[in-house]
Length: 634
Ligand code: ADP
Ligand code: ZN
Image (tube, rainbow, N blue to C red; front, side, top):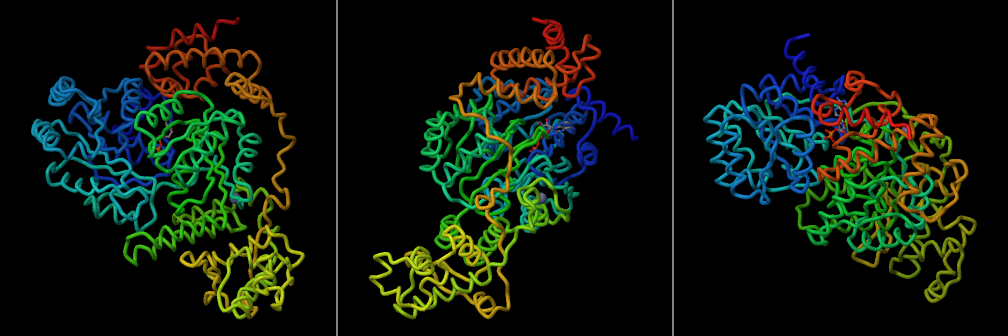
């Protein structure tokens, strides 16, 4: 091993208490620590932070401060706190930092004492900050620029921030200072756009696998969204922390309130809430156990809470990049987690309309439509979700055995819906011929099923030849066929004309029998996701939710009764300690670290130090107290 790699391993152990690098990290760390530029693509939860934090540690003695550019102002305090817990000197600069503190920080940077400085792009680009960096650079104490959430520089990414564009001043102004840009969003178009915008074309590109094997993907069609969500929460994640995404602010608030009525601890988060409320809800989500955050996509970037057990989408998002980034927030700790999504025709219509009505140019809209279609076909697909997701990011794989389609038998459940699709398409045509105008999905389905509603009779649609030709098909089935026809472009839903249906060219081969329409059975119709008897529902309190968690631990045989008692004592101590430091508990120790301590019950500082997640600083700060807690048997 090179001396540099030895040093990197040593620092990994000393500060983080980790014995091994995760996939990709070691190469990146060694490249950047050696002064190279890098563009890093790694999935959310893959371990990107370490890829700049560790080089910052290694370069600090000779080169001074690494500047981390991050849009996450609300999380900077926690990020810096986490570094300090690891014994790494870190600071942030934003509007909450007073003049006095800022001056003090400047002095420390000039002397090269600060390892990491977190700063938002808009702040970095002020004359004052640039002057500071100029001085630090002149003193030879600027070691590295890390540009986090680098997709923000690209309009193709899902979170464009104009301030990021101005970061292309860095290479000329601070020549010789290595730069590392990191993102989890990475289709090839966005990737090359990032490289170009940040003048990183010559940088080494590191692309990690995008697989998150511990996340189970499931996508179902929406029938009764709320209740489907509640059932999912109670059946699979009672008392656990998670995020529920909804499209509108109104729906966020209604859903959060309704979940609370149902006994689920839920909080709302969206850009329309005051900054105070947002900050408070975010802090509670990070600091307390077992909360559900109901949010718009305004929430989540940079949320590094490791024990988020589920991410649920109540509505279909815009594209796969957004979806994958959001679902990636589940299970950063590597333990089993769920990504669960509902989608329906209304979602498709709404997303199409948002694209159509956006002020962007046609080329941009066309790309956005393609992206929406890709997500829709993922949802409608009957093959492995993971294979499709990874393929979207350019990665080949084989069926995962850990998604709804793999677990439900996937392809074996597909059925040939061609005939029904033909009936549906010709019904749309016949109705139009009969009335001279188009109608929406509801009318078409009523006619197909032979229902003499007032509206059917009013327009004489009981006289058309397709009346009642699909009398035995359920509405759920018809809707599935309808969505699929929209997804493959055989039908268009005309948002400008009361959501009426119209045929598109892709309908022709289906009508002619040249192309089949294959569908998968909806989960609700086959009951395929057998999960054993559902737990009795009792009104929950926070204690009962942690009791549920402990019971699950015991049932899983992971920890014996004594170990569970130890775990509980350790957790209580962690809660108090975190509260006193105003930090989220996982910044003190991860669950997995506490679990290991509880399990092996170490009797000495030495034994304790060999556990993953306990570096020098934490051993020193907490070791003795933890040993006492381990010994205490009552
Ligand atoms: P990302 O920024 O890519 O979304 P993070 O940097 O937040 O991911 O890392 C995800 C989780 O993995 C964190 O909880 C982190 O502590 C943990 N982690 C990172 N690297 C390692 C490692 N080498 N060994 C063990 N855990 C790690
Ligand atoms: Zn699968």
